[in-house]
Structures are given as structure tokens and as C-alpha cells.
Image (cartoon, each protein chain N blue to C red):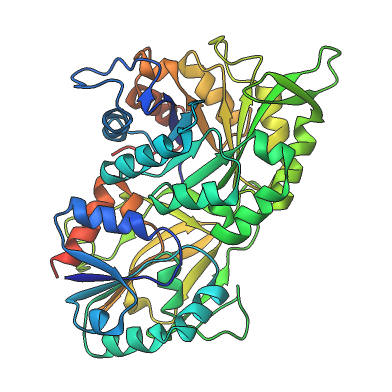
Length: 254
Length: 201
């Protein structure tokens, strides 16, 4: 049975996990390797590492982290944040990451998507989209640079374009819902998912068990991402999976 | 010593790291002698069938792999590596595969409500006497990423199968030849156990 995926997201700065992770018995809750391994054991289907390092040696610390994570984490993982070139893709994939997420650089230069897909295969190109509802209710617009700059581009159109250029997956974050714990943006998720041929990961807003079900059933998401909810152990991955299983949604249970 | 065939086709590092984690000695190489003298050979791969076959042919590695297989060296193909071991693929019409086993690689047909590639965790139905899946429970989950799938000529060769739009031959086993469409190196403890089974043959 093909399953829906549950993906914890870890923010990393200078090689350290930023938001504290409340796992019991973690020797170093700031170490991406330790945290990644713990999530693997806890039943995560994949991991996303979002590197927010701004320093000049950002690339080197990122690659070092990927190398170390790949030594102990044997589930798929994605690395995003500060990816600008095909060379960045190469360095990260070479060290053992499975997918690379691009956001701002792909908006600036959409050909990056097709070049990376041609060179490394679509399966490793994740296009991250930060979307926000327009005030006039006419749909969603995309932002770049961590949600600071309104690009004035329609989110649905951009997702369709990313699919056409060869993206393998869309990581779709609702800026309106992110951090609210009021649930994923179902309309956004559903509209994007129904308009692209590739998997969509819903992100932003998870607060309780029902939200996961909504994202899959009503939002038609293929995977869901959550961060603080898991980090602070408000919900455990196994709890979410037990619930979804009971609700008739197929998940991987070991 | 296990030789991982290096032909510039992606994700080799993950296989190397998984073997290191299992305490297995391995070498990533394209040197024929190192492949011929290895106890076992792994043919990994991510990417396109046509490009990969061209690289294997141009480098002479295609013949090295075929000869080693004929000599009885245990060989494990992973993902694209599985596909390359068969006769042909609809991804690259007119291109011959290694032809070590009989069967064809076909495109997963589109279907309403399904995304392609088949990307994520799916359960496998395992043939009971399989050596590769020794002590792996029935319906275990493994990680797949592919748009083309294997239809082996002989059901006898199929060690595990899965369902996604179509019936997919997920793993094969024939004498010294083994292959998985999924990624054991990314399938958590189940995947590591499968790799360990291959290493312990």
C-alpha cells in the first residue's frame, strides 16, 4: 500500500538545529545528526533540513552537515536554504542528500529548475513555494527571501511552471497559516495539488491531529511537513500515524 | 570487498555510507580489475536509462559487469541499476540494456488521482524463499522513486512486488543476480537489513 508521508523540518543555522527539540535522551538537541537520527527512529518518512546560515562560509557548513547526516540517517532527506546554482545541487547531492529545495534562486532564474532536473533527475529537485493570500481575496501570491519580498507572481501559476520546468516535488508553505497552529491552508494546497502532476508537500499551520487528515483528504496533499509541533513533542509522529491509520489514510508503520 | 560501480550516475555516496554503517568494506570504482576481483558488485544509479547505458558502453564497464555476472560474482542493481540489467526500456527506445536478465522496463501509465513519479514508501509482497529478503517481514515498507517499472519475463525471477497504478516487479533474484527498484540505502532499518543480506550471501 502506497503511503502518505510525514516529514519533520529542521531549521539549521551554522550547523546547529535552531529550534530546540524536546526529544527525551538526546545528548545534543542542537546536532542535526542526532536529531535526524532520532526522527528516523521515531518514524519520520523523510527529513527536511532548512539551512538559514547567512555567514560567508554557509556553503561549507551546509556540505559538512549533509556529509555527517548521510552517515547515520538512512531515510531520504532534503536540504534547502541558500541554494543558488547547479553546482550547489551537485555538492549537496554528492555528499548523500536525496533532494535539494530551491526557492528564491528558482524565482530569479527558473532555468535553474530545468538545468538541475536535466543533470540530476527531476526526483531531486524540490521547488519550495512561500505563498500568501492576496488581500482582495483573488488568490495567492509568492514571496521570496524567506517571505520578505512579494514577487507579485501567482502561486498556482508558479507551481504549474515549476512542474513544467521539471521539478519533482512542490514544498508548499502557507505564510498565512505558518506558526498559527490553526491548520494547513486547504484551499491553497488543494488548488496547487490539483493543478500539478507532481507530489505536493503541505506546510505551515499544523496544530492538531485533524489538521493532518484535512491536508490529505481535503487538501489532496501527498505529504505533510511540520516543525515545532514535533520538536516540542506536542504530537509524536507515531501518534499522528496511528490517528491517520485509524481514519483510513495509509501510512508507513514499522 | 564490495565494488560499487562508479559511472557518474548519482547517489553513489548513500550506498557507500550504508555499507560503511554495516561495517562492510567497499570501494567505489570504475577500474575493471577492481570490479573483477571484488567479492560482490553493486550497480547503483539515478537518472536516465539512455544516458546511463551510453556511459557504461563508452567506458567499457558494460562488458565488465556482464562478464563478472557470468563468472558468478553476486551482483546487486539498485533503482536505475535494476533497470539497466534488463533488455530494454521504453525510456530510451532502440537502446539495449545489459541484458543480464530477461524483461522490459516500461513507463508507469498515468492515472487520475496518482502522481508520477511513484515517490515514497510502499509495501512489498515478498516471495517466501528469497535470499535477499531473508527475515524481512511480509508487507514491509521500502522507499521508491521511479517513473519506469520492470516487467520481468519470468515470474520465477521476481523476489518482491508492489502495486502503484500497475503491478510492479520491485525486486528480482536469479542465481547470483539481484536487483531492487526501490532504494534499500534509503529504506531505514528494512533497507539496511536487505543490504546486509546481500553482503552476507
